[in-house]
Figure 1 (spheres, rainbow, N blue to C red):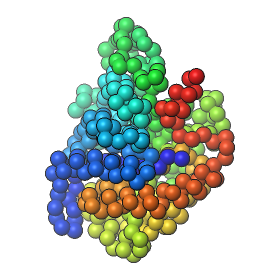
Figure 2 (figure 1 turned 180 degrees about the horizontal axis):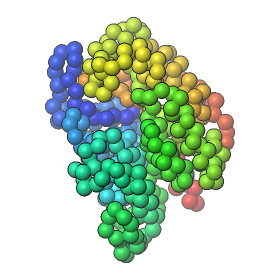
Figure 3 (figure 1 turned 45 degrees about the horizontal axis):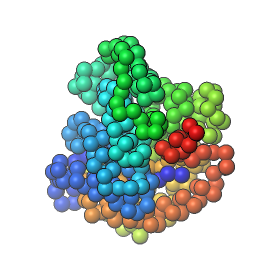
Length: 357
């Protein structure tokens, strides 16, 4: 079982004191958070990809390459790589390069994004979102798996005798997760290729994602990759932790109430009741996270959102200490003990490399 954190890289005013970090400060804070994640024993750090304010991570591989040089163990990933608006050739090149720099500690999550204007900014039509995701990913896989590629499609110029460089490290392409919050077509795509499916169920009710993950599992088995319970599933989550539960509620409430995504909507109590958000003690985070297995079955990756809504860096680092020292060790022990022997671990570069031998 892999545990980690993901960031959306928002630049948000701290509602408790009115201060807003600069873009430079926020980018440097994200790097510090990634280094802290490795320090406290987390398995994964993932960054989103955004091309509009108030977000800063427009170049994920640049950031992850910088982090790779300062870490040795943690897997570096994306929580969204825009398969619709990025050229598959550039994705193939960028992530293969990152693989080499990080000695294989790389995977990525494909997504369509949730910012409509990004499509015309990069010369695409949002009405073609699903066809773009399907065609572009098919080409990406081909680029990573074939040394010389001849290809033609609907959305980009043809390729003739093209070789993407560098080639994937050890001949093993990065493992791909497909992220979606609403599209069965993306779950179908993940199942067809035997890739991972990541349900970032931080906003919508559990029942919605039970249907989506259940569909992915059924189609994974249909395509002959293994039984439904062997499908590779990742989940999103959110937590704000303090040793005393009431302290966590009191401290986090102003951040929640003013958050740019869900602020000024449901109350904190309503949101924690309906979504994975947990505000409270380490034990409360453990207890709620353990219910995810009851809802979705055995799964391979759990990522938490910890650094959003204007939380100061000092607070985020304190959160990571509590997560790494008091929450993850218990979750790892409990979930590993419950997982049947035939259900696989999350793929890594080493495990995928070994499968080729």
